Length: 387
Image (cartoon, rainbow, N blue to C red):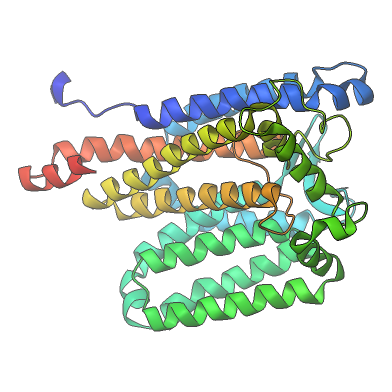
């Protein structure tokens, strides 16, 4: 293979967009966490230094993961799914799992706590992508092939709701359904599955008092602005203060102990206050470029007949897209409050590191698709280059 025909090592669109997201994330974590860091640790840059350390670790792991061929993920997808289920069970054990804010989601390893649900999101996609390739015909022609992964989803849902982690359950469910739809499941069956999932999610929400309170609160948060609607009203105040162009980087008032979780779940509200509507829209535009590019690479892998890689990239794109939509939707008050981070922006080691690993997998998909396109016929090459 000549130097001219060498596959492209990296996808420039992904690299540029992720560099912008990580840069904005560092700035916003620094701005949103300085006051609370100084109060808790007596030093304003505690969270910033840890975030930078997480980025370094995440990028190192991403470099290692990039070297792993996609076929290895396919080969061991079943084992990774078993590991995910065992981790979800293990975190529920009182003397093993770590409880924070009433939720048992973490495994503590001395200086680092792993939020296992972040790995579960990735490994579930790794497994489902493999399943969709192996049972493609059954999924498209029958019912049972499409129903089997839903039983797995139901079991994972039980474990997640025991933590409880309703937000992760919603993200995984949205990703599951999207991947099934794209794989060619019958529309009648998909409509039935969508109905069952919608009824199930509604039942889970309405049968739980605190989830029901969140549902009713987001409709009119000002009615309980000093109770269950406190977080959302403070978030909306932040956007209102920001206006079109913001109050300036570092000048947020809401991060001064008014807005809870300002550097994690509600960091988008701080960004809206400091950088305004224009800054928020520009950030969302970068997300659009990033996620659309992942979907384009999925289509490119499919055109190269790399079906597992295509499903894998599609699933990761759906996961990140749904998490961005939910986090932003919660912050602006169009969705009930959920404890989900904004990918690559919010403070959090588990989320950031796993997101970097997922990015490395997508870059590997791009690399292998680029190499495969060189070996295709001229007609197929043209279809690949168009995406």
